[in-house]
Amino acid sequence: MTSPVRSGFCLRRYVAGALCALLLLSGSSWPKSAPEAKPLTAILLIARDDLPDSNFAASVVLVMNNLGPAPVGVIINRPMPIPVSRLFPDLKRLAKVRDKVYFGGPVDFGSVWFLFRAAAPPEHAIQACDGVYLSADRQLLLQLLGRDNPVDSLRIFVGHAGWAPGQLEAEIARRDWTLKRAEMEAIFSDKSQHPWPSPQAPKRGT
Picture 1: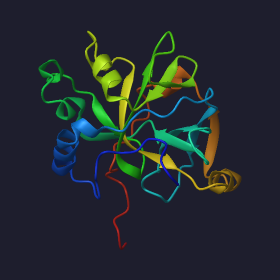
Picture 2 (picture 1 turned 30 degrees about the horizontal axis):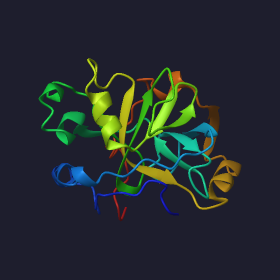
Picture 3 (picture 1 turned 30 degrees about the vertical axis):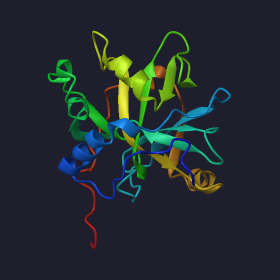
Picture 4 (picture 1 turned 135 degrees about the vertical axis):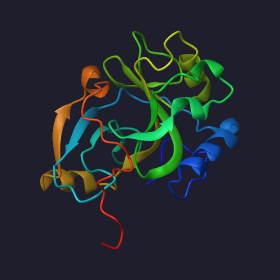
């Protein structure tokens, strides 16, 4: 499916050093924010314990229904071994920030999205659920990172999850996912963190 946010990055595989280099070199061509849309219909998907796909094993996915012709989402609990500060080497104030960039999903693995909390609807963002907004606007992200607590209630994602029309419904029907209401507290909870790539993920060819 076509991503609602076009990427300015070109990533073909996961290598920490190469990923950071490409992100930094591509800073002038970040994906633009999604067009104005109706309020999102969002849910949380919780993967079943024995889901065989290592990208989604032990994952919690925030899924939104009107960003494109089929559901689109981001995995909210898969931090990568890359600190936010490495995406912004010119922002010296981030040097001590330990928060990580998150693996949003295997689709368009070069696009940069972010979720954040806000009391009022900001420009260049769309509402994911009450008090939580989604954007891919670089200037808005830089503005958020300029706050006294730059990563407070902010998560940055590389890539996203996507399904073909009817695919997610079929996965839910075979009980690959448990559905839960999308709420601010659940999205920004620090519990159930599962690093990506998972140290327990099956090796290819085995």
